[in-house]
Amino acid sequence: MPTRPSTERAFANESPRGRAIAEAAAAVIPGGVNSSTRYIGAPYAFVAADGAYLTDADGRRYLDYHAAFGAILLGHNAPVVNDAIRAALDGVDLTGIGVTEAEVRLAQRIVEVIPSAESVIATMSGSEATAQAIRLARAVTDRDLIIKFQGGFHGWHDAVARNVISAPDRAYGRDPLSKGILDQAVDATLIAEFNDLESVEALFDGHRDRIAAVILEPIPHNVGALVPTIEFVEGLRKLTEQQGALLIFDEVITGFRHALGGYQQVIGVTPDLTTFGKGMANGFPVGGVAGRRDLMEHFNGRTGDVLLAGTFNGNSLGCAAALATIDHLAAHPEFYTRTHALGERMRTGLRGILAELGIEATVVGFGGVFAVYFLAGPALGYRDLMRNDDAAYVAFHRGMTDRGFLMLPMSLKRNHISGAHTEEEVDRTLEAARDVLATPAC
Image 1 (cartoon, one colour):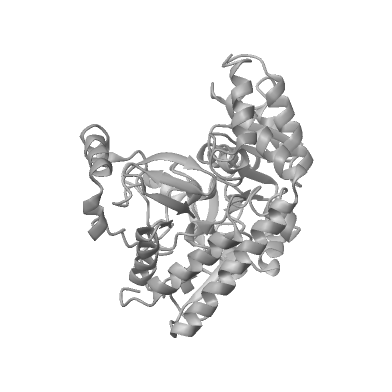
Image 2 (cartoon, rainbow, N blue to C red):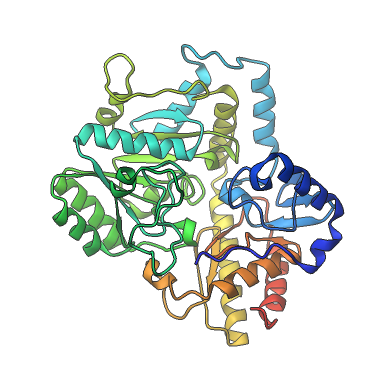
């Protein structure tokens, strides 16, 4: 673990245009892709997106469950979002000074819908948002350490780039995602076990008055879907308050997808800070941090002491896309009842197929998110995931993708149902899943 995707498949040889684009990319882009997990073999390159579908360079149409790591909520090229962006193109482009009405409206909208939001800053991505939140936590507490959970992913920056999909011999130990990270940065982030409050308490006991914040995905979707217990999340809230540390919810994935107010609305626990990203703009580049006003005022460029910088922060196109997406979700609450119902239809169907075939596996998820862990028993934390049959997991996703249902063929990656998916498409996916799971490769 992690298991790399298979990059050569039989039908990949029938992808001349896709292969040609991939080869041209490799000549000028390191590895041929601009993010390390993007190269999966066939499909190599995409040329069109519409609703629940992506079309590759060789004309194959895929029902998309990858959804840009979950950022596509409404469906690809949603007219309500694209129309808002077109309108924004005729207004302010980029000023780099002052503020625009769109920035104000977006901040006001976020304050209205996110329980923890009293004040908001805009960024360009979720990684930038978590970097700002962690810097703020260290500034306001005057402490140096943070706690994250094994399996949680909070972006590419040094403060959190460790211990995501770790091999069993590296889990909970020192497992940076990259060379080039200073030892001090790696060691300033402590690792706990999700759904295990005692593991967090032990870190506070061992590092008294040094922990600035606990950051977590309320549902760690970067390793599928570990659903938290209410006791665990409420315990984190109480523990951080007692210890003088901040509680940060990274809702880059869960925010706006599971409920308009994020997973904090669902579980009824309010963090000190919340980070969010491209999901609130149906995939367009935008992110931000929201939280208590007294904390957020540290970003105040006139009176504060924490740097907030970025020419693209609050840019007109990102704001337009985010406002259109949030307004649409607010006006159409049936988005949530519908995607949750389709997600449950998928999970129930997969459980039935696995039982029918006698395959030992656990189907997990929440709302429109689903994943199949090839392991017995419940999966509450990363220790459970170390029993996952990674080869079977990758084979299942590879088989589904080869049949036209796009699922990232890497271990522990979840799948997403958007507002553009239908019952018929879910049922067709289940038919394909039965075929794939019945093959010896799975």
